[in-house]
Length: 294
Image: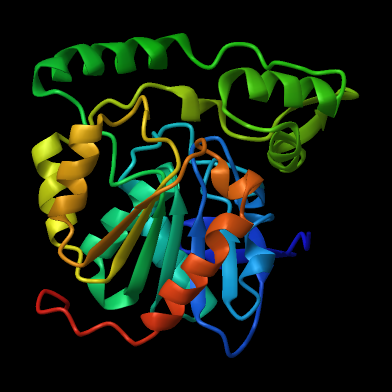
């Protein structure tokens, strides 16, 4: 399993880190991880795409990338500006997007917002952003403000990386090997013990989220070909009916389901690698100039 080369990008959004498997002539792929994961979540899959120029980012607040200023929040749409800045720092006019979970939602929205920069999109176990019910808007705002007043609390310390792995597996559907990959990149040392490198503010309640209607409108505006790959049909985030409606909203979409779990791409990458490789190869043409692009 090739771990990838460390990469740092000085962008207008701050310093972004990641892992890279660079091949000068291959299709350019930007990989975006899930919430509280990091670029290491693509370590099992990336070597199985040997003819691709693949860069996996640590999104802000995760891994080795910059944290947001304490006076700002991690609003979901702000990650789109990080993706845009990363492409500029890489010198890529366009690329393919490969996203898992939260990273897949970011990829979908970026494809809708910047169609001139996206050749194709592969979404792993997500179809767009989480959506809130309109009736819950006020309660969500109240919880967000209350959490902000309380702050992040005390830093949790662990004696060993093994302790971090066990803690991570209690809250995520991860094998021990997958959890260890993520934890090693997420760990830092404080007073001889280990703690999370990720920004505690990532756990704060979002003050506002999109409605389902807004999410569907954005999915309808994706111009690039899209491949969705669901590993967990019984997802607690999306009902089967909502998944079907979102897939139907994508104009040029192909949809596959696998029997697995949320981090299936880490534990069984060989089962999906060839499908992803073929999809990127098939659609490796510059995107059409969007009518809305200035």
